Length: 190
Image 1: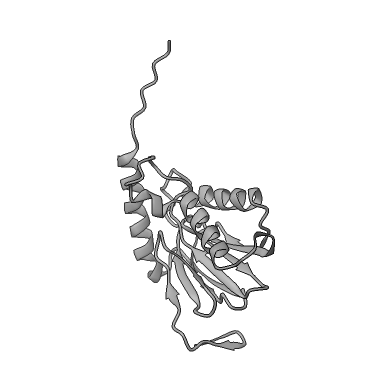
Image 2: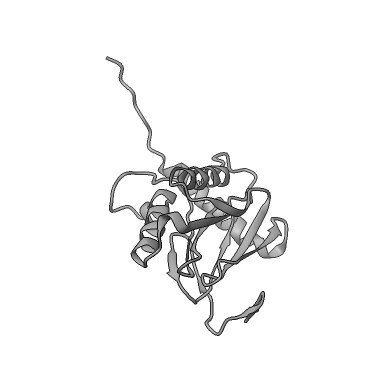
């Protein structure tokens, strides 16, 4: 596959929600709606990684919950630590951020906006500069990341295109599951 000026003999690794990977050669790709993908890159090592998360934080604090792998707080820490474990140095890392689209206009939770805000705040707190981003708007996105060069390509698709309807349906179903799982809080004042 020819992307940019570099030909890849390895097929890209596709990251589904909750996934992450750190690579030196194999390209990484993902498809995003309101989810966010963060690419971290150490140019000195020519090492890159990508994650794909659905929510900024876990819905509950149980360590047995599947929410852990889908949440940004866990996804960012895992990717960052995996990069360091492979020899990356924090002061050499740069980031690229993608996603956070509003593809289901009826979602009241502003998941995409919250995901982008979380990723931006996390990277700022860790002092990792964001050198490129393509976020928000009424788009789904396909992201292709070359971990050897740090180059990333993002193709946006308007929500009303036929190919994005499956993504719209999946996000609407996910939002309904989130609403159903929200705990009812009872506050008692003393």
